Amino acid sequence: MATTAPSLMNQQLDALLYQETNLVANLANASALLNSTYDDLNWAGFYLYNETTGELDLGPFQGKVACMHIKVGAGVVGTAYDTQTNQRVQDVHQFPGHIACDSASNSEIVIPITKDGRKIGVLDVDSPSLDRFSAENEAELSEFVAILTNHID
Ligand code: SME
Image 1 (cartoon, rainbow, N blue to C red):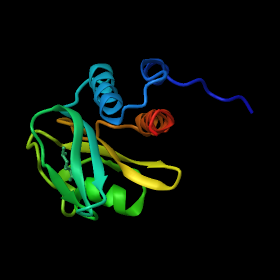
Image 2 (cartoon, helix red, strand yellow; image 1 turned 30 degrees about the vertical axis):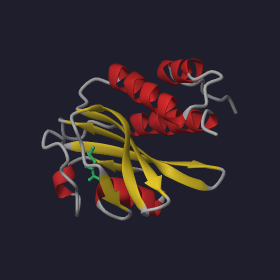
Image 3 (cartoon, helix red, strand yellow; image 1 turned 135 degrees about the vertical axis):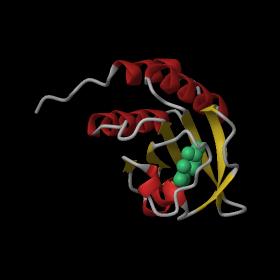
């Protein structure tokens, strides 16, 4: 079976992070790359699990100021982390417990990040448009996270 080459954005991510392992630097540039590649976004970034508090803390991102802490299981972010499943939400206002950090958000996709069985956090991407994220976007962002984890110690 032929394997599909990574998308241009994902090739760029892999090149950008070549021989780079600093978590904050890598996540910062990953969020910048994503935000400048995808159109129609109002927020793109990361929430990282805090071992001490047991919550998800705001990580590097592009967009307006956002919620600093999210409880595991709460909102789209906390649900993705808790269930370790991608959350592709067409209309965030229909999602039980959605956390409105930025009132401009209408759709959202969240992808869990794990490394060697360690649940690191999530990638969170928001759009002001309803139903912004396609199944193809989900596949590309899942690959984006997989590449990213190769560059995290
Ligand atoms: N809307 C998210 C919270 C994070 S912000 O979108 C940046 C949620 O419901 O989990």
